[in-house]
Length: 333
Image 1 (cartoon, one colour):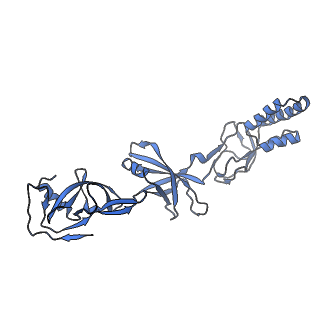
Image 2 (cartoon, helix red, strand yellow):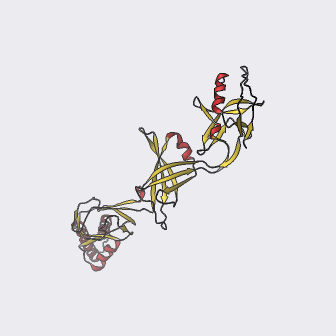
Image 3 (cartoon, helix red, strand yellow):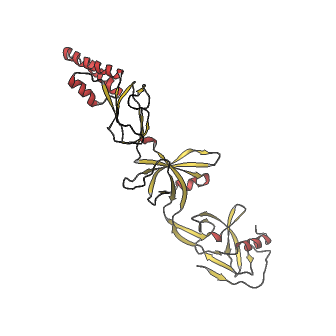
């Protein structure tokens, strides 16, 4: 509650006191308790989640005879055929498996069968193809490469008829059900942001919000900008028409759990010599004592008072620069 005090029409400077008396009108305000939550706002960039990026890299050389995943950014499902290939190495391994089956049938020794089957599995040949070879007693010339996960085709190196070498990446599949959001935060706000218990992500193009989870602070700071990188994980909502996509700019609001705090309006606090002060109402009418306080911003209107004042204390809410001038005259600084 604001209280207007009309002070005497004269100025009295008391040199031996630690307070000042003023002739001008000063509005005062009481320190109050409020249940509030801090909020910090940053801008972030959506990126792919490294754990959801899968590369399809054959362990053999070969040629593409039929390409099913033929368009970049095509959506594929786990187990969906990507390409049919011919590989001399895989074909020989299949023949070895058929021969091992025939030998085991004659001799009763299955050690060669187990070895040949293991070799096919290590090549990445599907279990269904291995079973088909066993049933038909024939080594099939072609082998199918299947999608190991669901997602979008972010990289495609081959076309129909292309040749490829062993250990060469043919496809890169990215699952966008979960993405990362990376945001830059100043060094002096790291502790406050890491203390937040909720992160709200809002794309610029829509009002739909996402919840950021698993906050991770990268263990390095950009020396040129003195900024740290905070990473959040966000789950894409399948029902929304505006999913989070890599490369998208988003707003990130870090919020703390609401709790009771002492508050003052910003205009009631003055910065002096890298410290914060208020002018607390003295014992007598018109007297104000400069008191050092520790504060932190809540929003663009209020400070939270961490120390120096108690609830109910009355401080000057206006004319702070005039009070500051008189404090200097009195030698209180």
